[in-house]
Amino acid sequence: MPVLCPSMQQKQWVCVAVLALLLVTDVLAEVGKAEKQGRKERKSGCGDWQWSVCVANEGDCGLGTREGTRTGTDCKQKIKTQRCKIPCNWKKQFGGECKYDFQLWGECDLITGLKTRIGTLKRALPDADCHSTVSATKPCGKSKIKTTLQDAPKPKRGGKKKEQAPLD
Image 1 (cartoon, rainbow, N blue to C red):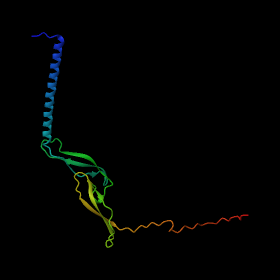
Image 2: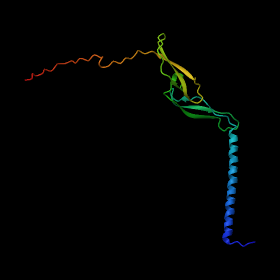
Image 3: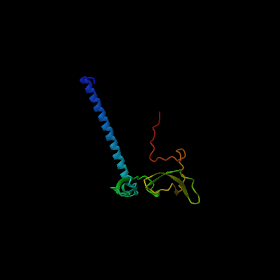
């Protein structure tokens, strides 16, 4: 057996220690992965959250709350309340949970005196019951003809005229 100098023995011990450390780290990482997979399996026993529509705290829009429920025997939490917001600029006629893109107003129907336009669903709040298309009507307005300043009569000025002094 060859005699090793102390520096060679120290290098070997350092190499062995590094390899042992890497081996322990790898084993611990595998154990951690197994624990995480076990947690995921436990969570899968719970059903998905089902959310109610947002109910405004005051009025028809603004901040509000909605309630979520889920089923499952292993679930710790089965009911949860969440804050939500109903935008105030959405058309209330079609429900506060639905937002539509509207086309331009159509021609005036002379029989009914109404204009119509179609809206297609653009965005909806979660779990909202929205129609894919809606129709809006409004009364036909009088035609607005702008008059130019040349066509309009000029206003008359009231008051006394100043007398001009004769020029010499």
